[in-house]
Amino acid sequence: MNKINGDIIFFELIFSDIKKEYKNKRKEYRKARRKHIFYNKNYYIRKLLIILLVLLLFASLSFIFFNFYFITNDIDDHVQYDIVLSYPDDSTMTMENYLLQIQYLESRYNHNANRLNSEYWGLYQIGHNIRKETGYGDISKSVFLNHPEIQHLCMIKSLEMYQDIMKDYINKYSGTIVDGILITESGILACSHLIGCEGTKRLLDKGVIPEKDINGNPIRHFFKLGGYKLNFDNINFKKLNSLIKKQ
View (cartoon, rainbow, N blue to C red):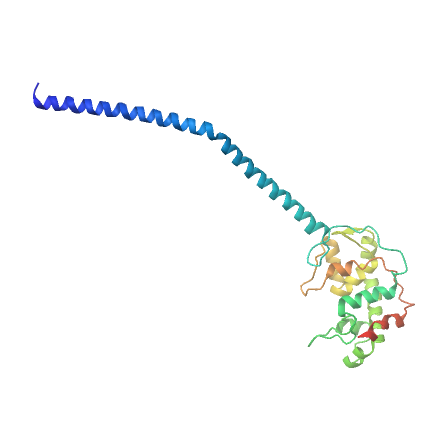
């Protein structure tokens, strides 16, 4: 056997040993890996359970927050879903208190209320067109603002006008629930004062009453002025002026 053939056989023997050793090492590695996974499977199960518990806790807190925030909370920026099925039928539901509620929402009982360059004046923030339609359009701004009795009369006339315009909607929607609010005549008239009769009709027909209009006025609060006993012929003006004198 020559030297070249001897070298070839020598290297083949070496590579054969290396190959066997590699296979043996690979078998040991796989065996060790399977053993490692087997003995540590409890660790992975515990880790998975912890993750599931954290997710469950997060879901529970989210559910509690949702219920508290959207159902039990009664703040202006969110819709109130707890439905009032009836309004009180007592001495507080008078025409005077109804007008006082509107005064508060519109001007905080300020008979001089008038934003710069605004056509809306006084306790009820009555606009020029309504003052004109109710027969008070020729009265000057200074006289109107300094005589609350005129403002009361103008407001009463406007409510009577809304009542006539909205009579079909009053008959149709009174006693029904619209977007979580019990609708009554006094609520419809209050909203008609705020956004007009046509705007009120659209909201009722659409069945959606937003918290506020584009000017930030609380529409839902006006609709919630429900259940008041409307009497346009016998009003205690002294009671209406009692809060004005404190301004």
